[in-house]
Image 1: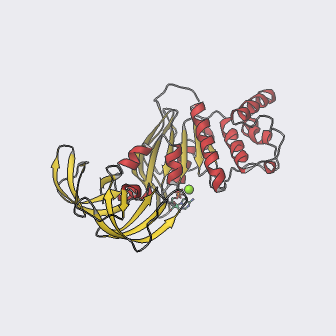
Image 2: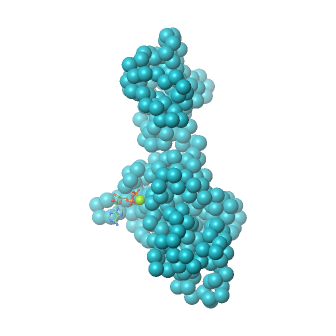
Length: 356
Ligand SMILES: Nc1ncnc2c1ncn2[C@@H]1O[C@H](COP(=O)(O)OP(=O)(O)O)[C@@H](O)[C@H]1O
Ligand SMILES: [Mg+2]
């Protein structure tokens, strides 16, 4: 678990995996740095679990190269790789105590009894379960079971820790807490971690970097902020943060900026390599600002078709010349009723040119 910072721990080069006619992973290339938590994010069936199992050695690549800690492991079995997986269902042995569950991998590996006991105690302390050795999994909360599963993986001192949708068995309230616990532990111990989820909010919250997958390939890779603020295409813009996609026209380029006509409004947006002509713009729901005052040249006219109160914010559907827009508004004190005519302004932040 130690080593210099910034070194690549996991590397995929053009890795492909098929199941019969299905291409589960296609020509995948990426690198994961030591101490980072990298999330594989994407809709169901896009190849996240297969990618994780390829790292673990539970699946084998049809082509391409996989390196872990600089070593080519493409042809090696799971036991010959220095990785541990925390499964979706935790896969704890129900008839074994917490201590026995955590010790299992070491005992199977033939470690001496005294050393096993010391290591189990150490790892349980790391995850905040000191003194829980004698309990059965059924005597623990969901969050505690999750931590036992993490302890069981950590005790093997893997170079890489793998999580497949670790929160899916928890209720909504516990999800945030366990999520934060995993991230805190990962950062505190500097664990190189690959984390799989289909939940964009979860991915934004825990990740150093996110690899967004679509149809067995990488759609975009970057930090949470890069993906949210500079999505490469419509798919990423929509998958992360529910963007509104509208047609626009790039009038001309001015230095770093493109002067863009969006529904009659002229905006200066970073050009991102696009040239003059028809274009697409992704607009975040919070970048659309509604007002019941009369529209002027700086506004687009619209009409609220739906209004929903969600406690912390309002959600509106607004019909406009740009199409139907999804709007999130933090001001809940004076909600706008469905049927009201509104003028719409675009904030400077949260409007981006994207590939279609
Ligand atoms: N063992 C398998 N046999 C056949 N098809 C599989 C197998 N595992 C995964 N697949 C298929 O590969 C694709 C990717 O699956 P998976 O990696 O599990 O996606 P995700 O985890 O993103 O939901 C899906 O179409 C899935 O049905
Ligand atoms: Mg999966």
